[in-house]
Image (cartoon, rainbow, N blue to C red; front, side):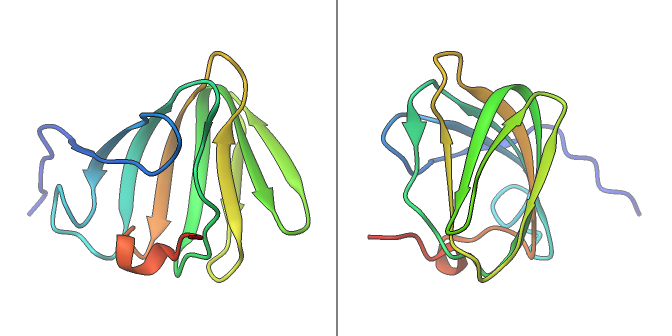
Length: 120
């Protein structure tokens, strides 16, 4: 039977500035551990600690620009573009431009603080 999600749960975000995470599907909002789907709204100048997650992340930028830094590259992902990051690889997300960014992130398996492995 289909499960309708009425609204997201707002999740506290890591980083130097307040960022809005609206989890639609995931461990918190729907009790789903296989996948998480969330809309992110990050302010300009936001940066989060680097991480080496145990999940693949698929990100589609809706507005603005999201910077995705890995050990080998720096990728600026603009509205209408997407990026895939692989589990076990170090990555860091930021929104350096003044307008920030809005994007959708899908994690497989679903995001959990226990498996994100953020830098200290």
